[in-house]
Length: 129
Image 1 (tube, rainbow, N blue to C red):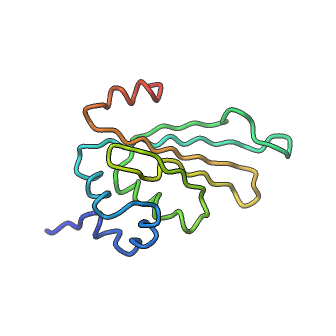
Image 2: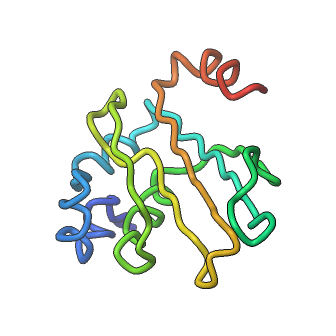
């Protein structure tokens, strides 16, 4: 049984992902097991029809795989997410995606933290677990 690497699996999105500085080699580096990716999802609901509240109403923190990260990043072009790039151990990659519901009543912010497996304890302290 031959398994495809992430770079081969997401080859059709190479153009869109290259604009975000995510290349096939980056995905393969994330997939090799030396890195941990944590996703923090924060959700705000529109308050008094004018602005979002200061603190999010829902927060969810979970570990994700490199494949899940690739799915989030490859969907950026379809949903008009705001993208923030940051330095990580594997280079400059998208670390924050912010999107709004079509009626602008819900704001969802997804923050990705990439750390080397040796620094997993430091990440959990930073994330509050």
